[in-house]
Image 1 (spheres, rainbow, N blue to C red):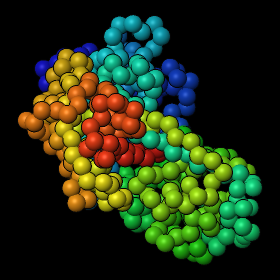
Image 2 (cartoon, rainbow, N blue to C red):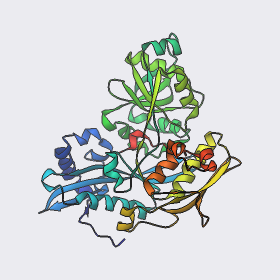
Image 3 (cartoon, helix red, strand yellow):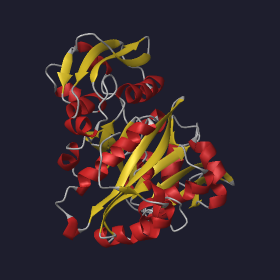
Image 4 (tube, rainbow, N blue to C red):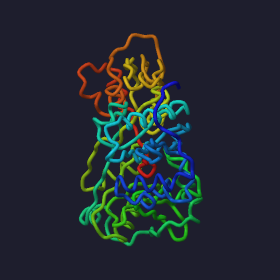
Length: 389
């Protein structure tokens, strides 16, 4: 790309300097908050970009690749994190430089999406739309008593150890969607945000894992082998922590999610994360095909027209038929497909609204939604919490 910024690429040797800078700006102990990236031996310094003033870091950002296995397909994604500008250097456009570099790198690598967390309106300027659905199921004392009955559970929980990684990965790979993690990194990734990983055991055999906050208040990741008991998992968790807790749901794990729905005291839904779609056909086909594999969608089709995003145009990553244009979206005989087309759109909208239209319930509230869109949408979207940087 010919677009020029003031950013420079870090090397692994710069990691300590970048970590100290981010720690000062955020007042967060990044080495322990996100050890997969900021532990001294992580080798992740090169995933950062910085802007320097007089040789000192004035701004920094992390752009970290994560591969997701979606059904039978691997998709490349990038997580943007640790976006920081020191106070005395703000107002000089460094965030635009850094987000441009992150998006250009991801687009050139062939990523289907870039993901971050942050204030919605701030990041919409750079092409990030609030997409997906974050599901939370709440369980309390009476919920466990009425839904799970008396124990003891046939499962026990013990802190996961590095020697468990291969067994935990084997269980995780039975899921419909999961992040591709190396065995040597598996436990470290699960320590993100000071969380604690546990092995779920039946006797000496590992049947799954979960990741929870230190006090047991939130299960942010849950993986069980096929046929494992959700009831016994919830009971084992309550037996260990003995207090109210929440469980993050996964729309691509219908068996576990159905049990959570039927057994919880209540639930809540909200936007999942801010996502920049860099390849609409790639993202729609990966998630749409997986949605068809785990559900029973109605047949239908429609053509959506997506306008280009101004920031993409500015930095040179807009591409007809990929980031914008007309796309035919269809489900026929239970098979999903999305592709660029020359057909006239049934509905046209700006880039941000289009991302929300496709991957959230927004389509239900558009009076101009064609019948085919009402039959097919939303395309379910999920991204593992532990891998959000």
